[in-house]
Length: 214
Ligand SMILES: Cc1ncccc1-c1cc(O)c2nc[nH]c(=O)c2c1
Ligand SMILES: [Mg+2]
Image (cartoon, rainbow, N blue to C red; front, side, top):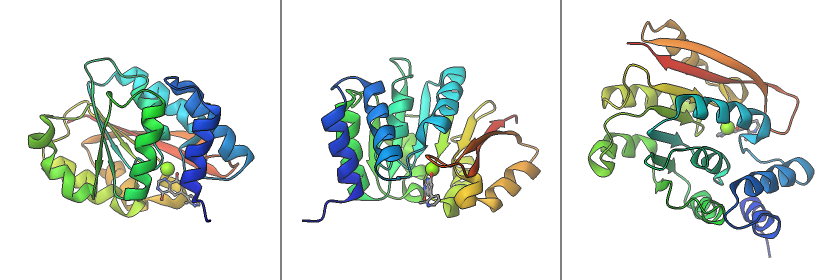
């Protein structure tokens, strides 16, 4: 019967990756998506930029908006110090179900909390539910329409501090122009973008890096 793309990605991980080896999980997904079928994982080119930002920030607290199949979740979790708290929010229960299994295959289930639901519902509850004061790093990779509203919501909820870093995927494709406009014109943010390409393609893309300065 019909097997969904996310199921085929999971099968590729279970077939080709070694349990407990995050790098083999990343490699298996990238090979599947470059050789078999495109999927909206951040991919290896942008993934290396993500890795460098995570390593530089060395965050004690991380929020990922948009888990999908857990590709970037595994990349981030594999670089975190043991005491770090990492929350990833996924709205789609089918994606969340696959991501849990991909994260478990990588042996990282103890490093990350996958929370199902809408970011706008969960962001106001994070402080009390997870005992987190502010986030050192936020990776925005969910839905372009919510980048700006969720960033404002995080500000309002006091989840961002001077020095917090926001890293946003897909600011060009599909594009989040209102978000880019807001952060570029705000005195609170120092922004920088990393030139890259849309995952598994040659299309121009940027990872938009934001440092909060005030
Ligand atoms: C799906 C798609 N088609 C053509 C071009 C780009 C995309 C695309 C790529 C991504 O990296 C995405 N990340 C998070 N959320 C998305 O909706 C999303 C969509
Ligand atoms: Mg993306």
